[in-house]
Image (cartoon, rainbow, N blue to C red; front, side, top):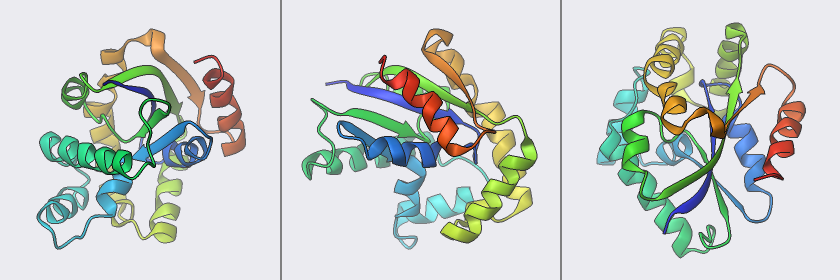
Length: 193
């Protein structure tokens, strides 16, 4: 079965998690943030150590481990009834992070739309990430060098995912505006999906 899927797409700090949590609170939407799945790992476990090793350098966790961990998380959410694939729309944030992951997931994801949260003010992104590091104890957002590397990685590895899925699915959303306005712009399109 392919999961009916909405992708929240954008640079680190663009507001994907904020918008995903809100959408996930609406009946028949299930939000899965891959970063949260990784951050909830036991850092002493084998995969937890891999996550800390890569994220502390601002790099992406290897594709195979990322997709495997995501698949296990979705399976558990399905088994516990939190995600009901036959009626829920899956809202993904943080996966696929590159074209290879998109290809790996092509048999399970039916991507119906992509919300590309564009943040043109780089200072906004950096400030959001640093605030988030303090509020949420996110080590991957604490260092300016790591933030810069994450943004370079996004440009080089993640942004090409938009081309993979094609422009007809992409809705560009101004992520520099207030979160409520971003949500309004997203919801205008969600009701048409």
